[in-house]
Image: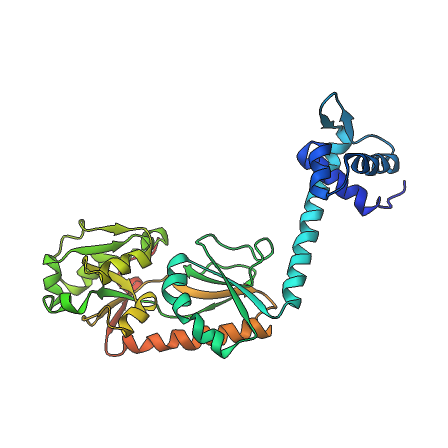
Length: 317
């Protein structure tokens, strides 16, 4: 038996036709004529010694041999495409594609983009704001900023910060809310994205640690952290905000965090990239910049009592 592979063009024609179950659609995808595609498949069948398609009146169907061949060719071309994309990204040192959650992108990355561009004019950043876990081979992404419990596998992953949450409000509202007990009379804004990250560090937990009684079942609820922060900036109530996401608003005094108590959840932000790429110049430059910017938020924790949820019996998830 001769195990020599048929020409790659013949295998590519078969893979497309098997995926579409149509010679015409496969020819259109490959930008060839149906006659040319049919010739390539006949060439493959000649090499194999048996047909891979049954030609019907207005359709085609795979033979037993075609059904055996189709999965392997589909997987092979997918792997080849992924390897090609990965190699092209490695050779393109001027573009860096970053994915992060919508809240982190809008509240943290976007406002700081100008500073990075000024420091690194040779690197073009591209952002993909999504909560979906990126597949570095499939999604053409170089770096991910992830938030959660840190279960990354087979990648390079580094924790970025000790994120913590605390009540935040407008300066005008803080004039009337002097103590944690005053929150019992305030409108509490709920960031329900924390629940989606399996975080139990919520208003109920914060009030319990603060030793106050407040009805935490009412108040507006938002599925995105940045929307909850924006509602607090608009004066709609008090939000239990994440310090890293809110750092620019705190710096600009759009929000204040008047109380000394903060809760530190197990879930944290992490810098993630494929193993072996962490020392690529654009990724290294972006990592160093992110770490330096994140460190600037540490000053908001000075003099505060930061309680880890794991220490008070509150579990994430």
